[in-house]
Picture (cartoon, one colour):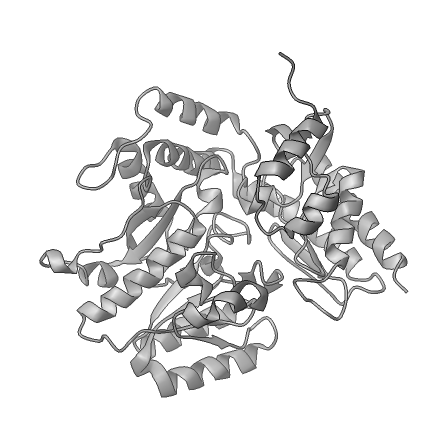
Length: 436
C-alpha cells in the first residue's frame, strides 16, 4: 500500500485537524501547509523530498537540532526499560538524576524541582505555588500578580492573566486573576523601574509575585531589555517581600548566550519555570524550580501539601532525554558553538535594520528580530508575507504579526545559518520593496 500523497494528506488535515494559532477559515480556503516527513539537524524535509532550514527551532524547542543521535539513543534505551509510571508516592532513576543535575545548573538557591508537561503548566505551577505559599504563611490577601506589557507566559487560563498581548487575553479577561501589567523595560528602562517601585511601595501588601520573561519578551514581539531591570526587580521584590518568578521557558538553556537569561544579571529568583529546550524538542517535559524558602512553606501536615500534578509529570522517557540534553551541552560545548553563531546572526540583523521600512532590529544570543513597520501589531500581515517568501526560498519561519525573527537551533551548522540569514534578508527586502 503506497503512502498518501501530499495533497491527500492536506485534504484529510483540513477535514479533521484544528491548528494552533491559525485563522482556520483562511486556512481551509487557501492553506498549503508543509507536510513534514522527517527532520535532521537544522533541517525539515517534506513528503516531496524538499529541505527547509528550521528558522524557529520548531517553536523554540529543538535547541540541539532535530533528531540529535544521542537524544534518540537515550529515548530508545529508556523505552526498553520503563516508558511511564506515576511520580506520586514513588520515583525512578531518570527523574532523580535529572533533578540533581538540573539543580546543579540552576541559579544559586533553587534546590527543589517540581515536574510538569510544558511551558504553560510550568508557569501555572509557579503561580499556584506562590498563591498557596502566602496562604499558608497567613497572608491570604496576597493574591495580586504583576507582569509586563507585551508579556506572554502560556495558554492555560491561570497564566493567560499574566499575558500582555491583547489578542491572546481579551476573550478571557472576565475570568482571569487580578494582574497589573507594568510598563516594559524594552520600551523605557527608567520608566519601567519607576513604575515597578511605585507599585510595590503602594501595593506590596496585596501582591503575591512579579512574573517576568527575563531579557526577551518572546511572543510579545521578541522585545529585548537590559539586565539592569532584572537586578532592580530582584532588589525591589526582596525589599517589599514579594516573590519573583522568572519564566525561562523560551530564554533558558542558552538562547540568550548564557545558560539562563538571569545569569546576565547575576540574580536568583524565588521560582523558575523551564521547558522547551529542556527535553531537546523530543517530548513534552517541563520543570518548576523553587528555593528553600518556598519549599519550607509546604512542609507540615497533609493540609499543606501541593495538590497539583499531571499524569505524565516527570515521566521516565522525558527525564532520560532531559538528563542526556545536559550531558550534550557539556560534552559538545553547545554554548561555545552558539557564541560563534550569534555573531553571524547579529551581523545579519544589523544589515536588516538598515533597510528602508524596518523600524527596529535587535538581537541577543541566538535570537534576532526586526519590526517591519511602525505598527508592531500581532495581527499585522507583513511578517506573514516575509515568511511565505522565505518558505519559497527554502526556510521555515513564523512571524509575530509585523515582527519577523530567527531563533534557530543553537548548534545550527555555519553554512545553514549563513543561508538562513541570506534568505531572511532577501525576503524582507522583497516584501518591503513591494510596499507603497
